[in-house]
Length: 467
Image 1: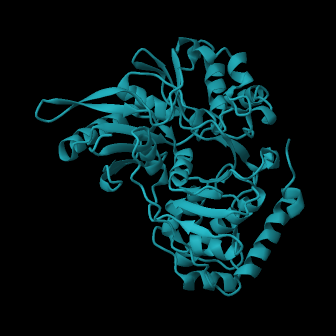
Image 2: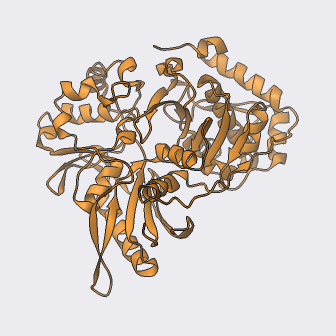
Image 3: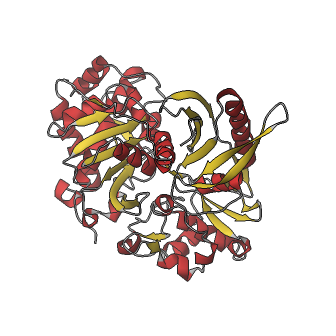
């Protein structure tokens, strides 16, 4: 087991980050950048060259400064790369773009049954297979030119190591490409003859090669390249590695992704953005999600400071509500996010937005049958009261928050440390104290009534099962 630090590239859709984690499990350096998404041939695609240059430059810096001798990756979902030799066959698509309606109608009819993939039919590129089919419809010869179909973290491990591999937690993430109960590729992969494009599997965290880092003084230093992992599955691994067992993970960032391993897959309703994720050790896990971080940004008007209890109490008293949905996907599809009640702005608007995300989380926890311990990870903890409001809404469950908001990066690090036989992380999660805010329970009831009115559903209808 190396005593040198590890570099983790945590590659988000909006922000990509580097964390240098010491052998003692401490972050000793970090850096951030914003990926560039540009227009090309009427598509929005990643400027992978700019991001790679940033990654190489930062890696050289931290190798020099800290003696980093290994790297790994966690990456946002819904993204893939087509490669041949050492080149991309096609630029990497931004998953937030919808195919033309005529193409969408054709390719959506090709999706495997939900009972096979546990991938709900989703818009844009939220199913990787949907965007692969879109590229195929645009140019039927394109995928044939590719030697490999790489998931996003594996694209970066390939860029650094030269070795193309697959990884199950990413392939199993509502892609339409994986059949969790068979632990194998889906019927779509075989129907499209893509299986031969899928590289051999390597475990998340395992060593797959080396990269020669060129330093400013002209020297080169080899660092080990470890296979990457899907970001929210990485967070789930991190909390399991800390000793949590029977728990529901609420992983927050651009998405709020809720994993409840205790829930049966038969509770999943494809119409409510419920799905099966697949853990790094190939186990399907019941999941529900909505774009909570994005929705908070939109609904709050871009508020970035904590929200006070006074602002929350004020908007509850005023009966100001935000109703779904302010971004695509989620358990309330087809609804357009809007406010009702008195007009609010500034911190009060942010308070309504925070309550909205907490109530959407609460609804999602009901839909996924969560009755066990809750662990909250990620950026929404920074809003201040999100965890304590959720604890007040769910008094029969203990709610833990992590002092570390970067569970996906730490999960990737834990996978590397575990592969080396020594995981230094300790459980420093805190128990959230339930907020005491007058009128919160009545506010929750009224919000649920408004939501039911939008869809014409009762709560019993909302829990309809999908085989």
